[in-house]
Image 1 (cartoon, rainbow, N blue to C red):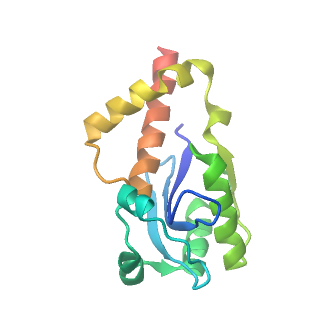
Image 2 (image 1 turned 180 degrees about the vertical axis):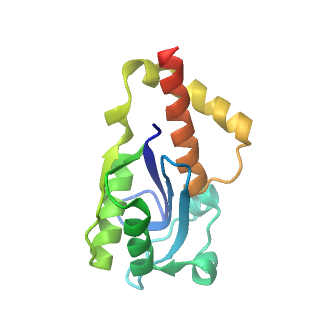
Length: 163
């Protein structure tokens, strides 16, 4: 069974950054994605991060959803268990910041993807991921697409290991 994967796009790369988009890919193939309207006191913005993900402040204002609604939706969508991140060292603080700001406890755990990867998977990870991206088309660098790519890469490395 495929793991549930979570990915964020953020306002920047450093300590003051915050999540502006979240995407989740569940084991059953369902996906969730939402832009997040940041609270007024979240002000850090890095133009370099915007160039990577292509999400502008005006796009967040037009298409983003209120932070509390996003957190409630995530809890309902995930429903429990563990969700994995390939960038846990940055995603975990953003995930905690999102829930803390909403005042809502998560009903699921976030864990590092490395917790479910073995050595053989890690050794072939980048080559398999490059193949997944070539097959799907590099597409946009957005949270739900990235979550799906990570999930598909995990699945293919798992199958390659078993073969």
